[in-house]
Amino acid sequence: MNPLPALSLLETRVLGVLAEKEKTVPDTYPLSLNALTLGCNQKNNRDPVLAVAEGEVLAAIETLKAADWVIESSGARVTRYSHNIGRVLRIPAQAVALLAALMLRGPQTAAELRAATERLHRFADASSVEAFLDELAQRRQAGDGPLVVLLPRRPGEREARWAHTLSGPVEAAPPPAPTRSGPAPVASTAWEQQLADLQAQVEQLRTELAALRERLDALR
Image 1 (cartoon, rainbow, N blue to C red):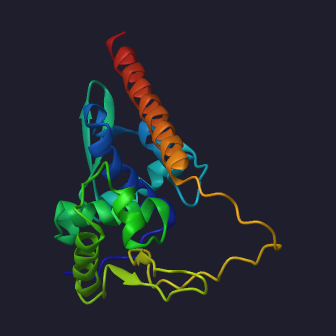
Image 2 (cartoon, rainbow, N blue to C red):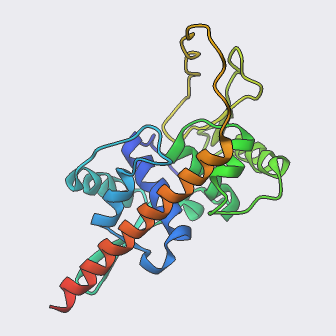
């Protein structure tokens, strides 16, 4: 088996979106090119936020298809796409969910990953997340090395973050720039989570609406 080539940012975004939407909008999965592009350009739960055209997404799909990462299917005059992450990497669904969250949102702690994958796979606790991450860190695919790495803890961080290595070696990002002294902002984790959930629901409705329009166009 030849070593897997390093994936670009857009290619990992495409894979992450496909893995996410498979669980969150199963009625419209596999995804059309339009729905996949909307998912790649989604503003919530994405880091970094992208603004790519359908042509760019299609080019990434063609590269991923050549390496069996993506499967193309046709139906109702619309070409649709699904991911093949689990089979290519030979990993279980739980590990696919963790890789998808890392591809969509960048490096995260085990606790953050547990929250990020809530709709993809419900982990019992952060320890179960760490167990799967440890397995991915010890995996070897054709001598390529681990699938995830634990980054060095930055100053001021309580927990170290994990990152995927599907795009090649990962370097720890520099610590955030210091801010002016002043009263600490009041934590609003619950409110932020509710807002993120509402934004995710809006994006899901947009995806479903796009799929419905395509179906209507196919019937005309």
